[in-house]
Amino acid sequence: MDSEESDTDEETKELVRKLKEVKKKEKVMKNKKRKVELRQEIEKRMKELEELEELELKGASKPKKEKSGKKVEQSKKGKDKGKSKDTDKVKIKIKTKTQLKIAKWVRAKFLSSSDSDSETTHKKKNKHKKKKVRSGIKDRPHDKVKIKMNWPQSELKYEFTNRKAVEFRQLTMSQFCAGELEIIRHCKISKKEREGRLSLLNKICYYASEFEWSVLLNFYAAWVKLIEKGENVWSDDTSLLEVRMLIGKKVLNKTASKYSDKSSEKNFDRKVWYCPLYQRK
Image (tube, rainbow, N blue to C red):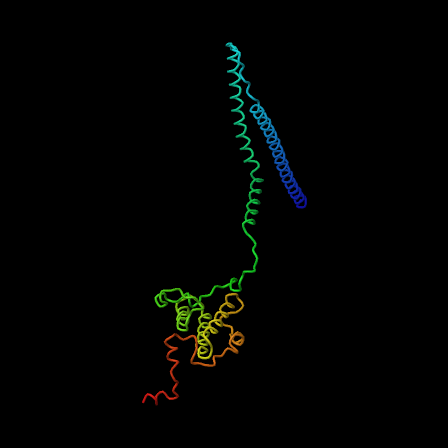
């Protein structure tokens, strides 16, 4: 008995599955028939509209007959016929307007998908047209940046720069140190960057007595640009860059360094005493 019941259950399941498949096929066939009917209706109405447009064009192209010099007496019957013709023309115009509206509505409803696809492709083409490909002959190395870094000239306080915008190459040592300390103290930066900036500033201050100030500015700029490009990190060692940029550029006369201000240059012109405490006495 149990085996018979299980067989019947399996048969019912198969029958139900087949019914579902048949229903799906019927739906698909109905949709196809509906689409075919709609397309046929659209084609018929389009043909009617084309015929009406041709008739209107023919009517507009017919030249008006010139009045002869002879006097023509119009009878009442002729007047009535003219009125009936005018009314027929008005009816035709009304029909054409309504049919045009219907055709527009049909196009908007049943051809919206194709229109949307064409619009998207048209927009994509326009986007590609707007983007002009240019030569890279004028591109510079510092134009391509992954991570933008803070630079000391941008963090200087306005009242301490004689109310003028200072460029990086114009920074004196005091301005450079002030701007770098502003970044370390007040800007939102990571601990690694803060430590890296402090160690770099420490090195530059030590090297200032041995190298020209322009050389040290170039060294700082090269290191920060490498970090902006993503090639280095603040925790990396700067010794390789120091070897490339600082070897062979020592200042022979340490008293004539370019980083100092005019007032400090005057002080350097004095004679250096080996024992200043003894000379003061």
